[in-house]
Image 1 (tube, helix red, strand yellow):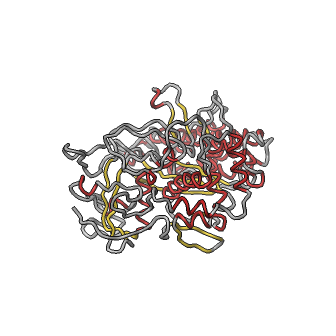
Image 2 (cartoon, one colour):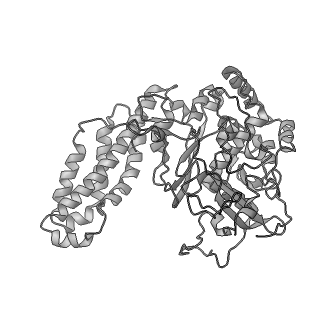
Image 3 (cartoon, rainbow, N blue to C red):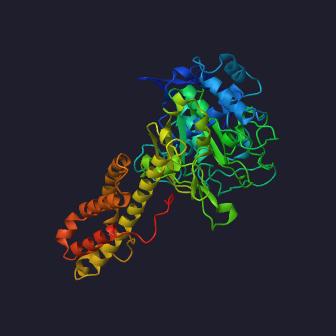
Length: 527
């Protein structure tokens, strides 16, 4: 066991959160984040999943500081109170901010021996050995993974500045992988290695309202209570005792538990001599109980009617190759049980915002493209322009036009992939089979070498077509996207149409099929 090192780092008062005002960047702690929220333009955290996780934590704290977490408030009273708060030119009340962070019942010390922030202090005795600092940092190879493109390896582990370590701590709590954790012994039982428990946001994409400054952003982030609440709501750092893995899970109360209390992982950071860096980490499972059903307010939810009840509703998967405009239909259309998707619940509260803010409201997109279990691909982020004036509640015609164009763009992308594969097969099965067939091989995947280049050429054209059609509502969407798909297919296959005798004929047949009207209308929300 690694001996305890006397070190301190306060997540409330020591700088670790990147923020921006104009062209000036600096780091602040949580306390200054709220005290100066009206003077800060935006967060500047470089890692998208850490940004998304911190926004959830900050929304829960903002609800505490402002009293918007009071379940006794009626919907009208809640909206009136938030409007009053948004009208304040001085941001959050400093007295309320200091009262919250000075509360002795709340622990914001990262290396507190009894209640380290968002950590489990008992792991030092429950785990036989630490997990290795490289396991903490996303992007570093660890264990038996090969270090092809990284200087880091477990034979010479490099410590991590505490501010960065805290951001990766948040990513594990929200986006952590299943399996592969360090065995943990609870009570008298032998150490157990529980797999299959991925983070609550793993492989998802989040959508966060973005105001003109951080004060507006955080108030717009707070979800509204949709039902009665009888249980006491606490965030993990407000709980006097760390949860026991054997205890039943606490109810997912609003807003603290639903935003900050759903982690499936337990971590313990081991500091360096002065707390400025982290030298080691324990990373393991947090509970043996299955997760409680919950709907995160920042996720697009899909419904699959023929699935079992426990898998009927699922969040939209993150896709690093997907541009933000392809998500607009899911953000702007009002909830409708006829659709296969529902916009994030946080968007249901935006119509109650003051008009000057509502009309300028943008959306931050934060996605982490992962597989459901353990493999991480890429994280990404984007910021939309002010899109809320296009919402169905304000401009139903434009919202429906956007939904139609997005559906047609997705439909023709799928058709392009299918027809590129079929055209390649037709070419390979022709007289040139002896030449083309050898380039594939019996163990190659069924996707043709034309599909990926065709999609890569299609999406920039589709985006240009999308924005053009929004300003030309009289032009039919289907032929316009079919034309974009045709141009992409011809671009991707230009060389092979000259080299392979039967390629031109196969591509001509695919182009004709692209322009043929479908028998059924493309379904909205299918991805």
